[in-house]
Image 1 (tube, rainbow, N blue to C red):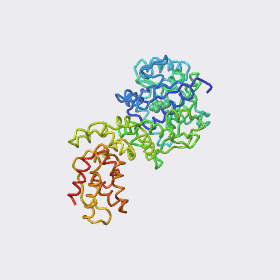
Image 2 (image 1 turned 135 degrees about the vertical axis):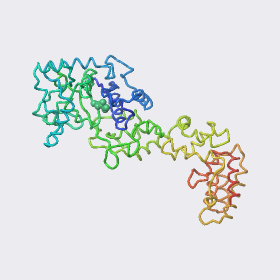
Image 3 (image 1 turned 90 degrees about the vertical axis):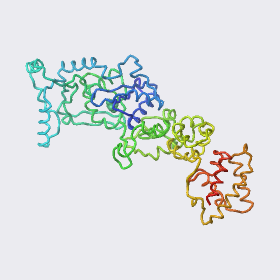
Image 4 (image 1 turned 120 degrees about the horizontal axis):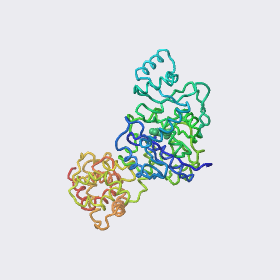
Amino acid sequence: MDKNVRVRFAPSPTGFLHIGSLRTVLFNYVFAKKYGGKFILRIEDTDEKRKVEGSVENLIDIFSWLGFDYDEGPDKDMGFGPYIQSQRNDIYTKYINQLQNEGKAYKCFCTPERLQEMREKQQAEKKAPGYDGKCLHLTKEEIEKNLKEGKPFVVRQKIPKEGEVIVYDELKGEIVFKAEGLDDHVLLKATGTPTYQFANVVDDHLMEISHVMRGDEWIPSAPKNVLLYRDLGWEPPKYIHLPLIMNKEGGKLSKRQGDVTVEDYKAKGYLPEALINFTALLGWHPKGDEEILSLDDIIKNFSIEGMGVSPSVFDVEKLDFFNSHYIKNLSSDKLLELAKPFIEKNTKLSSKTHKSEDAFLIKVIATEKERVKKLSDLEEATKLFFTDELDYSPELLIWKKLGKEQIKSNLETVYELIEKIPEENWTEASLNDAIFTHIKAKELKVGDYLWPMRVSLSGQEKSPGPYEIAQALGKSESLLKIQKAITLL
Ligand code: GLU
């Protein structure tokens, strides 16, 4: 890198962190770490109407959950602050005045009604939309008069109407825009506050941002950004536009099709490691085949060359794959800590106090951790362990074509075999030993015994294996449940 790397994530505080924004945060963070640079958090709250109370606090929380620490930000001023745009109005005024004094921007007094009329006319005449430049030709006197009358105004940038504007993107190369298609866009609103376009450029420059890494949806802003840099006499940063993230059908990721915010995924029990691993592969390909990557691995392997330009697909099954992987690999203490909130409700299903204790919860979680895709799946999956009286149809106990009597007798055999196991030796291995030795010696069929045993312990068609459940439930409850199944038959 030729310059000190300083990158930023610059969200508008409009609510939760979208998956697309997570990808932007991640790539900026990784880029800063990879090249020994700084990662900055800047809040772009120029749009009063879209501001959502609590968004910034929420963002800071979710950053800490994800493990992203920023080097500079609203609560970490390293000399480039404030990092919240609504606190930087004086700074913007200085540059808006500079542009106007140099004839590069002008006051526009057009009323909303006139602008509406203009738009309708353009539409009717099938002309490209855009400001028609009426106020560009106001005389000094007319401007003075309007100001004296207290007419509201905006400040627009004077955009050349001929030639081309070239944006150089580090991934896509040159992107050429025709100047005639660019509008004399608003830099300062009638309220006296800057627009995103203006504040964003001023801040990127003053905060010495070296690389602007953001989603492809910001490409239309890039030529306006470049023209502003030129008019302010500044050198633009390097641009890296990240490819769009699409749903499986090729459309935009939207709330209608499922969860789109990090907070949604967090609430469902997705781990930060899984979200990070999954998101890193949306637009970046590591060199080798290894897809399981920690944040450190991603930083180590990251390169701009590995970044793609075509849209990436958000495939929730892939996210599930990563999440199961990271769940399986958690230590049992950590898993207990994270899973507890999801299964706490189940402890109320049982009258037994030991079922609220960690020792029991750890066992229960261990039986299910290989199967769940997300921690919230644990609530449903572990219910059977907490239910004192299972409610199931006796028909479920029947395996294949065996008759009721046969099943009953098989369950009685199971009961007798395992009853002999001493309490302190009540493990999966000894359960297996006791039952399997018998089955093998008599050349019996495993399913004829294990199916009804499993159903009597779970009450379900599908569940963990009978030894796993029995081990977690303990000897007396297991025997009671088998006994109850016998009486049902
Ligand atoms: N405030 C913009 C956003 O909400 C920032 C876009 C940019 O990175 O330039 O994403």
